[in-house]
Image 1 (cartoon, rainbow, N blue to C red):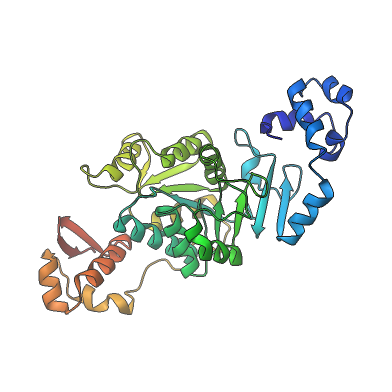
Image 2 (tube, rainbow, N blue to C red):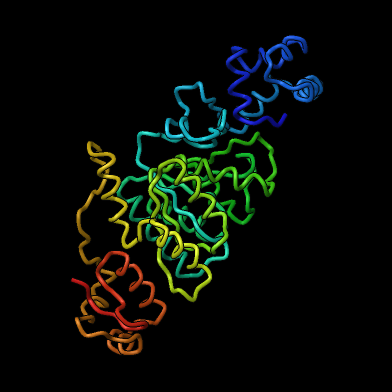
Length: 349
């Protein structure tokens, strides 16, 4: 039975439990003034195919929990958003609304740069005990989960299908790893397929569960911008990673910044924002400043206030271009290095 959450909330004010609704007479359901004749026909028809006890057994068998909006376990952050899901299915842990959380989202067909940025942001947030939320889609979403997993952090994936369905299929290993410290979340019943219209709707849950939303790469019209719209409606702060004006995947982020979103510079910006929101939390910001990690020592010591291009850095350090670019990106995000001219790098003090 497919019913809007608002209608479910109204009918629950008339009946005490879902079981009571399900087994109520047609006359009583119609008298509620909430259910249409079509709704009642669907309920009566489903009685022949559906069993509460069998569904309960299925959930137990697959280690899936269902939490309704009336439950104390239901995330507080979702209760006041527009059209909150009546219930959520969880596989793994149930998310704790008292813990700070950041949603990291972006394009499916992203660049390698975008993947590296998403992974690094997630790693730093995880190090500081901040939950990472995303949608387990290809591209930026997967990279965000990957960074958290690598740092043994807590991450949650909100799906546009049942929690027992891994979509996309290639993320099957990630799907199980997410459940170790975080969880898989969906408002759709067990077995639900990943239908196209499910994904825009699930985005309100991603933004609703997060305190801050970070968009890494996005085209002018994309699912990430839908999430940004939900976030604005929910009063959430949005950070967008800026990009070159000529890049299609930067246009969405640049447009958000122009419209008033925060310009993402380093993960510390987000962490400081959360420390204001959670002033009593000792979990936030474990270390105030980065020490120069050993992996960066050779490269960092070779940079100074005079811009150096990539070829010069390769000659002086003996590192490969791939190693250098990856380390330079991480150091840029750590606010240690900047690129004043395209392809030239200097230390930042």
